[in-house]
Amino acid sequence: MNYYALLKLNNFVKNPRLKFLGLWMYHITGKRYLSLQFDPVNACNLRCKMCYFTDKDYIKKLKGVFPKEDLPLLGKALFRRAAKLQVGCGTEPTLYKNLDLIFKQAQEANIPYVSMTTNANLLEKDTLEQWIVLGLNEITVSLHGVHKATYENFMGKGDYHRFVTALTHASELKKKYPDFKIRINYTFNEDNFAELNDFWEVFDAISIDYLQIRPIDRIGNTAYQNFSLEKIQPIYEKTYQKLKETAQKKQTILIAPKSIRFQHQQSINSVIQPFTYCYISPTSFWDAKFDWKKETFNQYAKRTKLAQRLFQLIFAKKQTLIAMQNKTLNYDIN
Ligand code: SF4
Image 1 (spheres, rainbow, N blue to C red):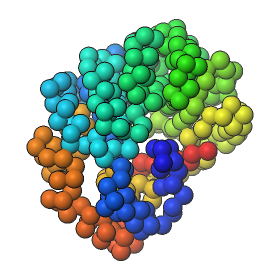
Image 2: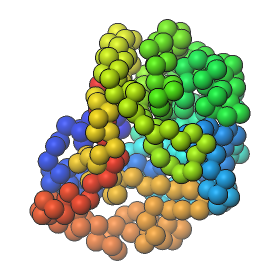
Image 3: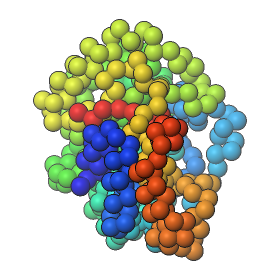
């Protein structure tokens, strides 16, 4: 089952106890269920106004490069249980010099889905092709404006021409590698939402497999500070329907909230997230109890009695399960 199918299954199963039953079964039968989110370098070439890269205090702390010599240890610790490897989550992975080593290791460990999130401004066609040959299944491209002026306004230091060229190259490579996927993640606010109505017209020539739209979130003292969605509320559903209809015609999967009224509310889909979502960067590692340079995931799971913990959650009280919710995985996949 591919990663998007697993996400859909998690959305489909509404009962949190059943979610834990499924996760427990995946765990004890040795199946892959971890979603590895790996930022190999704490840097970005852009300064997007909605991003913490415009928060001076935050970026002072955001430093470091994942040591190349630790990549094999990371692979040994986690890759055999990963259903997905996401390279680049909150920073720009194309600034990392050893991406080929990461993809090579992921390929050797047979990770079924390897994705990279990028602003695409530094993406070269030849390099992208090498990564596809090394098993890169998908690029997710961040976008904060459909038209040039909005794009360059919101994505500080970004170059719309370079972005469109990279996307065009990726789309051309899809003809040679039909399993390779392109995903666009569009973060919207009151000043760039209306442009979504032009999305399919502007990117008509690009073969997009997944389009995610999501509202701005407060992630620090960022340059853009309008977090209100009030002006979008009355027009959201019409734009959503328009995007959805064309997405269906183009066979693009739209990942979006059906309504933004309750968008920042917690979601029951998120209860399994602490057990499946593993964030790794040069300065942080998912679970501090996991001695990843010395043990594998299976050894860690055995030592910390993870199977027992998951099993107990199948019978947990409703209040315990509700308290485990957070704001992630709060969207529909169409
Ligand atoms: S490209 Fe991504 S990581 Fe870089 S500044 Fe923009 S939103 Fe932040």
